[in-house]
Length: 340
Ligand SMILES: [Mg+2]
Image (tube, rainbow, N blue to C red; front, side, top):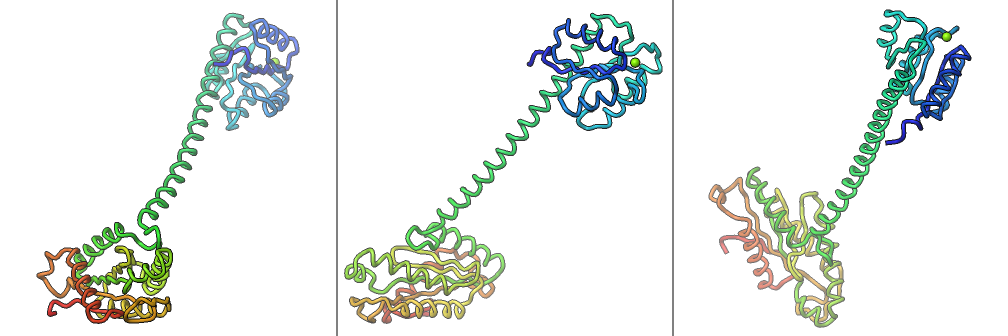
């Protein structure tokens, strides 16, 4: 802790001799920062211009007496914490009580004992210093909390960015396989709960291996990216999810969508891919890159026996439909049906 003798003291007394005696006493006790004021008004001016740790205040003064000045100090939010020792020739119990009630720390009667003065000044300064430290610690704590809040906020942003990145396929930027699994599971449960349909489109690029062999893997990557872009432009509802399912295979999860709705969406994707006019001289069916698409749907509101079905079944059925599209000439859409 700081040396008490470094504290700033203020003597307010209208009597010059009283001021000087008290000043000398305090100096002899080791205090060096002592300001003097001959009136309450002069005292308040000093307090407003510099830090004061303790006020030694005379009671009997013209214009504004000690009690009035005390009132003034205690009404000010910044000054009310400065301890005040009243020094008075008035040995009246009523007056002493009144001063203590108004917030004076102590009351000394002239002529005061030096040892008593020293003890009371030290006690007041100790208390003030403790208060100042508490305020400082509180401010430091608040600043630390603020920094911590900012750090948490930044961490949250980074975490969200990382989360988003961990959901994305590195090449195409659409959802990755891991995120596809999460979304499918979530939408499967939602469809089951809400007794709604859930459709899945699986599609892959026709003769993609030949495309890579002909044009190289960089061109293959570029082709995948272009297809991801047009497919993502076709699906518009916020809950629809396009994912890269495997190498050249993509998947679209369509919540609350029946086979007809899924067919319209799949046909649109097929059309947009063909319409990209990406040359594919090694394709056996078309001069441009095309895709085959398979659709499966689960309708929880139609069949009660589907209560026990699992999401993997939907993938398996879309895959069967995709296989059928391949078998039937590619560049087409097939809907899985249990009758076939
Ligand atoms: Mg006086």
